[in-house]
Image (cartoon, rainbow, N blue to C red; front, side):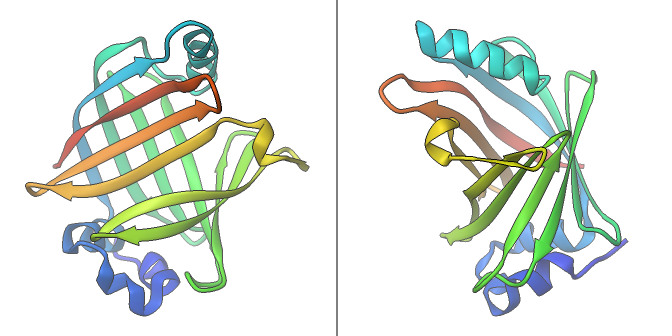
Length: 180
């Protein structure tokens, strides 16, 4: 089922996204492929493993990831499944437009207010606020994140990384996914 929810949020900037990202976010679809999961060293690794447990991420190493993108009347849905096990679904609700708006990502009791930067046709999330229930958490208190999707050789490069100042990377998963 096609939807203009993403196109409407980006407005004129939608054309700045790579055509494959445009199609994916209008038509929806399924992506799959291998991703490499890594954890930080020392204390960063301990924290990363705890965070991974809360996010239902599998152990370190190469894992199979399937991402299903769909739309409904509320927003954009991303369902992530590692190794055909538990599915983690996020609902992304658009607010306003790219110039003065944001997306609210809801995954369980946590919600994040996100905006998007477009760089070389890629989609780069930038976190503006995090809430646990109704409680706003200061950004300095939570791990920083780097999350993006870009096109490389007609495949979708996914990169998700959480880090803390001084400690560095807690956990990272990234890889090239192919559309079904």
